[in-house]
Length: 356
Ligand code: CP3
Image 1 (cartoon, helix red, strand yellow):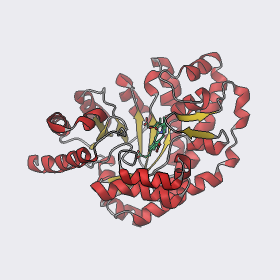
Image 2 (cartoon, rainbow, N blue to C red; image 1 turned 90 degrees about the vertical axis):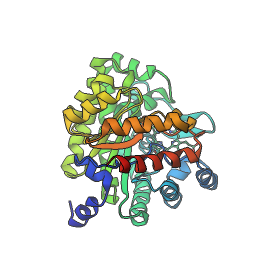
Image 3 (tube, rainbow, N blue to C red; image 1 turned 30 degrees about the vertical axis):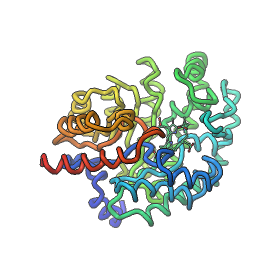
Image 4 (cartoon, rainbow, N blue to C red; image 1 turned 45 degrees about the horizontal axis):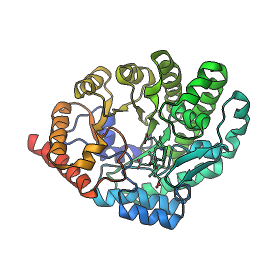
């Protein structure tokens, strides 16, 4: 780590918590904090003309990343992009159809893997890293910059299924019928993700998060093989290039597999979904030393009011004395009233101070 990076990071609360410190007021940021619930996001997205165009236009992608920081002063900014830029950059072109979510031309057997070409990724990854570099220039010094990618398993579910699904059946079928072929796909995604995250770190990301949104659909034996093992290799290979940069995992739906996931992958932070009991979050932090992040229900943030206040207080109370990053258990949804986000941030910051 260069000394300027080291000095700046002591000012960044989220980095201190990832190093294992418990702070009286936890750092706060929210998954999908840039997005359609904000009028200024909708305006910039309209200006870009399309979602992927927005991701690949550094000035506009940096602008939407900064919008929630200006409004709410979050402790961290997350690069504005999407997990599906990886298959897109590899040559499996991705389209986002209005109101329908992502569409890819599916790859359902090992023969189709020839369509993925790591030598093609430079231009698109370059544009995204230009966004990262701009952000590090424009963000307040104390704001942590989070880079990210999708985890190999979750990205594979889109590569194979060609769209979102509720049970990831296409990828699970592929993995059962041809485990060696599916492993080749996972290996391509691990290697590409290591390159991609490494480039984001070189451009200025302080930490990186690996989103495994569909980890919870796998049975136990498959969880170890397709979630834990590929993430462990990703973390290990990234650490060879950037030994001091912590990785945050998000094995959504992992349940009781979360503890083994953290121990075996070496992630320094772990995102907890809405289903994880606060007691289990405490046990996870105590049992691993990793920072735990989460886990307010995004729909409670839509509802707001006293129910939200109560849950904020319970969460702060349960996590006191442990390395905790305040967040939701999944991304903000588009019908979230922006004033509820302001209420959440205020309450986390003032309630924690009163209790301290
Ligand atoms: O958190 C942030 O603010 C950073 C940006 C970010 C986006 N997607 C922006 C986005 C991040 C970190 C993601 C991750 C992502 N993308 C995941 C993993 C996290 C999760 O939510 O489970 C997944 C599974 C995707 C794939 C994806 N991207 C889907 C299924 C969709 C369509 C659904 C939807 O909400 O429209 C997207 C599109 C997308 N990614 C949007 C945003 C702001 C909405 C696009 C728009 O403006 O219309």
